Length: 427
Ligand code: LLP
Image 1 (spheres, rainbow, N blue to C red):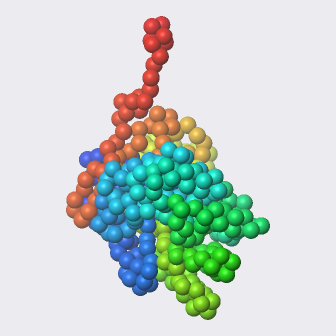
Image 2: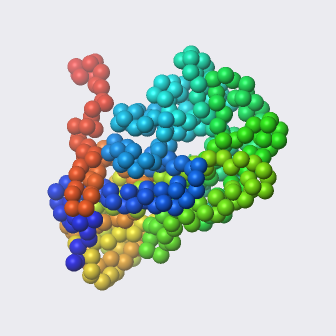
Image 3: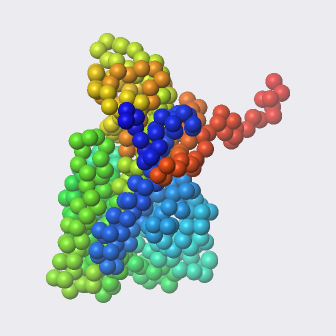
């Protein structure tokens, strides 16, 4: 068939029914990833847990899929806590990250019973303690550390280096001062250590290096304070395939080396192996997403052939922000041979709004449906209204069923928050 299928549905039929740009998500793909995590991590290694980094993509429907798949949630904002809570997500399976949690967000987390607070700094620790005190309750906490490791990814999505804005430095005994405060508090229950070193990592070295740092810290905590670390959260960051030649990594590729290291270290150093928690976002949702666009104007400028789409950096900001690379096909010309190189240009008023530079495609014509692959993560969740562009709809496909899970924004929606002062209206 000369047409792209998403599960058992023709992409062009979705484009016609729901309009473009359109985010399409394969539910089967998400579930397959969750099941792989169960099989090759949670069942294989006892005393483990997986939470999905909801910043990657969190329409309400996602909460229900994850709940059914028995995967927890990692949240980083009041909005994400609210989304989980409103959708009856079991809040004890929610972990709250972030480097500047506001008082309001901390209160929301405490009131809704968020299971773990990943504390980023001393001020936050003090605020959390006060909030717990005033609600006469306790909070389970982990400390996010700066493991001081480099990772092989774009600078903007690297988070484990010495000068990272995230986490508590391990230099000059500072971490131990913060930890002692926590241990002295009747409202804070110290559970463990957390790190997250970066995103879209395709080699395992930095996870292994950070795990080594965390293990030696865990041993230090035991030796210095006689305190057992019950949990070690090794974050997310597991990379996916964007381009046809990118490697495709199973979850075991990332986790087996870390688990072997952890098990060996704990055995050799006579430590109780902590519960190991992972926080994948992109690895679960990235490849499940395809974005459909309609090709509009086509032109040659100098050496470059531009084919313009009806979306761009407002629905996928990643190429402009991180020089991210994507692969695409023409959904209605799937089996036609590539003819020449074109550059897929977005429609927004920025020269950086080029979705894909120099991709070889079959003859591109106005009205063709372009399908950009692996757009499930950090596309919809980073969408914006630049140039007053409405955010596209999201459709969930399962087998031959397709359903809207997020409505397309309308022009009216764009004005919903606007207020015109009376004195201006009178003019
Ligand atoms: N845990 C923590 C604490 C994180 O900060 C992140 C991502 C994750 C887990 C999940 O990472 P993942 O498994 O999805 O790689 N907007 C960027 C990605 C930023 C990721 C920030 N933190 C992008 O589009 O590439």
